Figure (cartoon, helix red, strand yellow):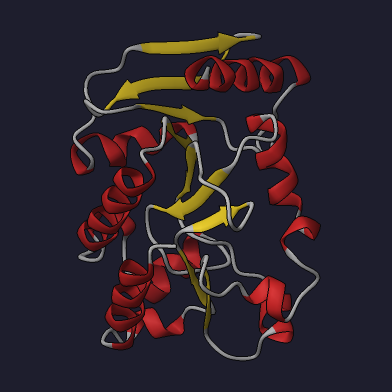
Length: 213
């Protein structure tokens, strides 16, 4: 558990009024809880559902220190996103974090609460915390869900030039970069909101497996 970093994020949140609008923030969320993660899964920012406020009616967190889904809800295993992670990683231990730690229900709400993501003054803080997470666990790879998030991450995380683009059924499904220490794979979003064929899913799963073997 990254106790010091989690404490720093909690303190940082308490000092920023706009960040206190979030139902929760997410960082260092390990599966299994006591495992040593091989890979980091990185999203843009945590999703926020109306039901989250019903489960836990006050601002909270999703971390290895305290996960409101475990304390108030039905547990981490009951969340569909966890099943997506287990599928693409083939059951390997992983840790979840975000490019921007604080939750919103959609991009519109994110901008209303926190301003434009690309110009957010909080991104550098998140980057520094994430870099400490990647290094603390010496993860073999970083997997970013959302294939076009590479634009945001290239300068922010010092990623090298694009090394490979994976195309299946005429569509880009993944892009591969490297930060000098580990590969970064940007994939189509796993929920399949914009169409994700079975062949494309299998290709992404295999590409992740090759990075980790």
